[in-house]
Image 1 (cartoon, rainbow, N blue to C red):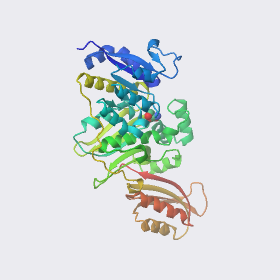
Image 2 (cartoon, rainbow, N blue to C red):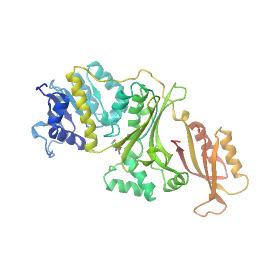
Image 3 (cartoon, rainbow, N blue to C red):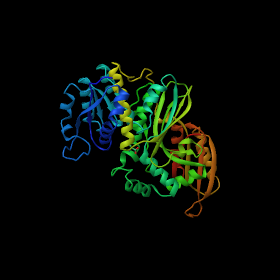
Length: 433
Ligand code: HSE
């Protein structure tokens, strides 16, 4: 056992950082045994030095993160600041000064993962980021390492806890979006500005990272098709229930049937209640991975919060420290396949479309013809009087068979132009069948 400690610098000391520091102190002996050397926290870079941080030696606090990294004796830098800058420059400085990096920064990895991996490789250091996707759930390393001998064809997951909480509330109580969001805010799940969560940006960043790992190809945030869940209504849930489904905000990553391209998307979708992801409640995350040899795997657990995220950070810290002692590095970026990322129009999926139509002869035929003209096959049609009692009008709910998304959206565009179609009440993709 080496007695000289490995030196760790912590960048950021918010909810996650303070929990990382606490566990490093309370579990110091265990960590030493598991790593084979003690780890010593030698500096904590923060923006607000005057804030009281229980359990952290005030002598470790600094506002000069760059100077901390340039000491030249740091073995591992833990970056839990989030955002693009200054995190990106600081991580680069860490590599230049001989440190490996553990990061929880999904936005940065989704945007600049390739450059960060290149910098790590250039300096012969590690870049680990288990905490960037789905909090405590071991997912990045199982996909990067345990499944490295298999071929992943599809990943479908709930990777945002806030939106899952909101959708779960809407499903279980019949509440509308705003009411469920207000409850999520009151309970501390949703942030004061919930945009990143409810508009799907957070999930899209995680989708980009997972797609890159799953398909050994470079997938950037801009390659991910994204739709938020703010338009999902109580009546969508009622329709979903009638079909034996619920609604989830899903990240779906797929290899095309011919293997020549991949797609990555985030949007709300109906999934059957029998699908394992349908039973993921409250703010939990779960990711369903389909691999050629392994078959179907599901990873489930808390996807956010100080302690769960710190668990993932500390797992990476142990791994990186072990690599350091072995004078080795872990796996770097694997992007050798360089598969093109197709656009949403090429995705093959099903639609559930709810139309308000005139209730008179020939309307159903006209609607059906529009689907046929766009090469979209109808699976089921259900007609009912308008729930709001509008006379001579009806609600028509059409569920399609699988078709390219471009054909489906072309159909909807054409339906909107029909005189007999008063409005398109909702459009929702149907997945997981
Ligand atoms: N805001 C995220 C969520 C956690 O609700 O899942 C951090 O990615």
